[in-house]
Image 1 (spheres, rainbow, N blue to C red):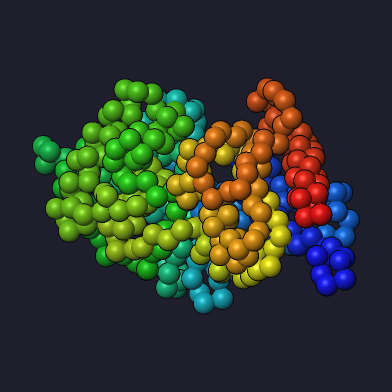
Image 2: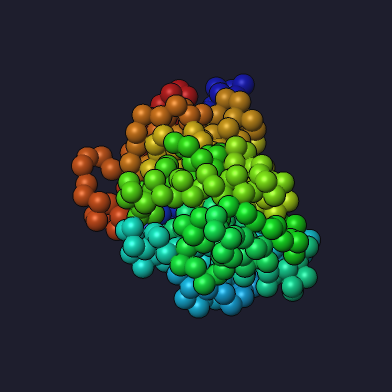
Length: 379
């Protein structure tokens, strides 16, 4: 209330990530904006397209950079043209998902997962570096491979050998499963900064193989093979002077985080870096309500996913702000969110829930409902 007893217009930020396979961050935020204004026509709504290094990273930076692309190949070796964005300082930004995305798997099963590798991303980075980029920011989310970054490193000039002394090359269907035990690290063509959406280590129950392998098609037997190979790879890296397996984020994107670290690069929280690069972090100052979210709000949320990261950023800028996460699926989770709300009022089969028109209508309705509750609480 102001001094005259009149409630000031609600200050709202819509900062939703994509609902993968359904709607983009831009689409989700526009639906949330419509919902807020339906409930509070005088509200001031700032829309912040967000990404955490995965799908939508380039879209979030499109307004502050120049588009580019290079020829490379995908996670199964098929030729593609992969996009990137060049920022004002000459640095380039790539999405690893552009070449290695889950949607590019020939099949999300053990057969597809055991052939998916990261060499195409390495070729993309090498081409961008040759064009003069002093630094490449590498978004690590949404990938379909679990090769510990072995493919990427081979494409950048690394050499590696198995226990029998045979050299492992890019002709291998899956360099990690070829069991490298010795590696010579290459000279990195430019500075690398990984933008990670999770803080998982390379190994263990929350690592690259065991936590994320199943969503990429690996069954229990393949997960066990990947974990064993990843242990040997971690030892090889340590013996080469890169003891990185325990570093938070080294397990991101199937172990690409470990490869970037081994190449002398750094890992940063993807969302915060992208908001800084775009200037969008200022939008949270003075906000009353922040709506964030993504397809699933679950036990991974508090490990650096967008809803939790947005909540922390928002509360740094506006201590009294209410932050609500909207999810296609919501589990009880310990995070910085004040509340997490499913966008569907009742049970909906997955195929229907994923239809863009259904998801967008549900996001709009939920945003309107949450806004009405916040307005009622202010009175």
